Length: 466
Ligand code: PLP
Image (cartoon, rainbow, N blue to C red):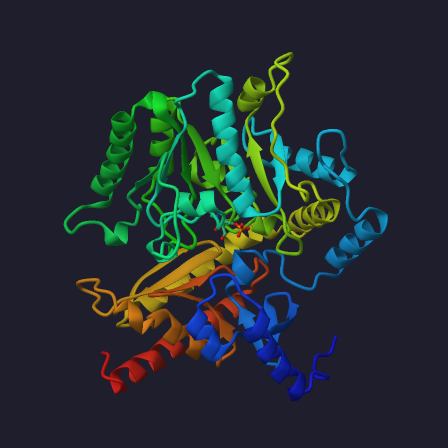
């Protein structure tokens, strides 16, 4: 639809209404009162358009999720058809629907190894929440009632429910106004080599991380540790790509101590790293549980899944034990969301978007790394279609700009006026564009970032910050 019919009066009213009624995710009260938000009214492939008609290449990909790109007619058709046929059905044990069954079968086929059992959720947080409840349930079924402690990592992000926020380890997500669960949750170091202690090489850094994990298990007692939870590449924590071999080594520690490995692939699945799932394909591990969401429907519908092993199933579903897994959401297995996921997977397969993502992704990585010659670019971290630029005030000492300066926002605003959206997270610009991105669009992203960083430098100098 043409949005030019929105009069400036309508826009003004919407801006006021946004401020008067709409509490956003991560609502920064003072900032929103002052600047409001960018009201997006249209999307097409990798582009979005605001209420003023300004178009942006959305290098953020919505929120790590618009994998096949926006405005796909056949997605609209699939969603409309399913809505006409069956808009909703209860998915508790006595009922099913074709789409939820088909999607579960498909996910079991795509997931590695014996991860053949699927619990459908409403998004990523509820998938991770489900995974933790499943771990507790499983350990109780085995009679290991003490084996419930969960080990996660500093800088991890696993969602915004009370439990998943407590599992996360991002300092910025832990303001003093919020409370967190602390019982039963332990945080290990973030595997960010760029921030490793001086003089430590990558191999030594890796050994330290593995030893820290094993020591933590021994300190708590292996009989009390239920699961290790980790994103293959940390997303919101700053696109942290761990040292080579890290996940395999951590998985081996899990194997030694009968600790379940939960791979949180909410971001890294459905093509973001060039595969349906990255755990085995990229990191050579066979987790016990995988959580996914986002690219599962490419954002066309809210949906997540907790996919777990036949080994866990055999314990919890022991015939004759008379158990019930009393956990389920009204919208678990929602037929319209499942229809969207099935069509999304069909498109990823038919258009061979995963091998394409691997090929263009390599180009994206290479081109982005060219920004490392700029004086405030400390490091570019990029793997396939997950990327970030980290800004520093001093490249030698890797000292950050003061947090209050919000350097990521400086670059973001200068890119935005040039028609590019990147996601500012304090001293970072994070990117996860649609997998349909062309080489020319990659060039546009990198060229605009370079210009925006150079302009930021001039403005920092003029304002006496650099
Ligand atoms: N896990 C990871 C790794 C994520 O990045 C996110 C969201 O960004 C979540 C879980 C939570 O997903 P959702 O926002 O769909 O609840």
